[in-house]
Image 1 (cartoon, helix red, strand yellow):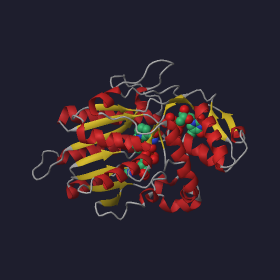
Image 2 (cartoon, rainbow, N blue to C red; image 1 turned 45 degrees about the horizontal axis):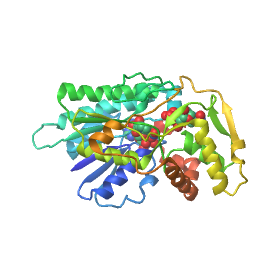
Image 3 (cartoon, rainbow, N blue to C red; image 1 turned 135 degrees about the vertical axis):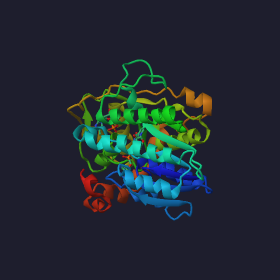
Amino acid sequence: MKILITGGAGFIGSHVVRLFVNKYPNYTIHNLDALTYAGNLANLSDIEAKPNYKFVKGNIVDNDFISNLFETEKYNAVIHLAAESHVDRSITNPIEFVMTNVIGTVNLLNAAKSLYKKDNTDFQKFYHVSTDEVYGALGDEGMFTETTSYDPHSPYSASKASSDHFVRAYHDTYGLPTLISNCSNNYGPNHFPEKLIPLCINNIKHNRPLPIYGKGENVRDWLYVVDHARAIDVIFHTAKYGSTYNIGGHNEWKNIDVIRLLCKIMDEKLNRPAGTNEKLITFVTDRAGHDMRYAIDAAKLQNDLGWVPSVTFEEGLASTLDWYLQNDEWLTNVTSGNYTKYYDGQYASR
Ligand code: NAD
Ligand code: TYD
């Protein structure tokens, strides 16, 4: 099987590429990525020389490029992760999110459709990786299930909701064999330090303030990125076409509690007196349209396909912190001017 994974140089994509390249030596894996500020080939240095792996630089918004690529490579499957992924950026620059997340996804769907059921091709599946943010926000009670109505509030979640609708429309209208998963917040190695957890790890390292939006009461359901990649593997190989799966770790935390826990563990790891890092916590103006609570009901995935998370939050957080402390060069690089050499044209703004 020749699989195109998009966004493989990003946070989650790099873990998915690594898993597939190592676990399935008989598959050929192409990683298509535009290398925006969030894409970093250093994330894949351990597998870049493997014979079943190839990097393809390109932008999913470029329809001619995408259709030529599919025509030439005749992929058997797509796992689509490329996206603009940061809510705060979507608030300042929504159009970029429409371009990549909506137009880019439709370009890929069109290219896949043109291969599907064409002579001499064997296009088998289009797997779209999405987010629980499409469901909107919860109050104190309840969880998102696969049948929860879409109710996105940020330009990011609206663009992802739109892309999910297009994927379903291509299944229902053209019979394209599609799969969708909606996952909760991920954390782990290679997470770009603009998102809450890696931002705070980096700021603690440098004794900088930890900006907590509002009162820090918002709740997120955190999943270790390697477990998300494992779920994608299971869904890709065993889910029924046209189906949707929620992925989550039943691991809800208020932001302020996550950051207090981080501060405590990092006091110990950095040999600072207990309570030192907590003093860095700074409450700042809330994010516009800030969703109060996300929580995933992953029972369908567990019952149908047998997936459960492999690590607890404490274990995942400890290995994440160790990774960031041991990979100072990665962190310095992505937060420094040197990193701009990886940037690409219009996407170079930070
Ligand atoms: P990321 O921002 O770390 O990586 C995105 C990758 O896509 C980068 O490598 C970037 O270079 C690439 N990319 C962006 N625009 C592109 C374009 N126009 N053409 C080609 N490549 C492009 O994102 P992530 O956190 O790894 O998220 C990956 C996917 O998972 C996204 O679709 C996101 O919506 C979804 N998701 C993320 C989370 C999370 O917590 N991070 C949770 C659920 C779902
Ligand atoms: P984030 O990592 O941006 O993920 P998402 O918005 O997709 O859930 O944010 C996680 C939570 O942390 C969210 O409730 C917003 C909050 N947050 C802060 O309080 N301060 C920050 O500097 C950031 C980036 C996020």
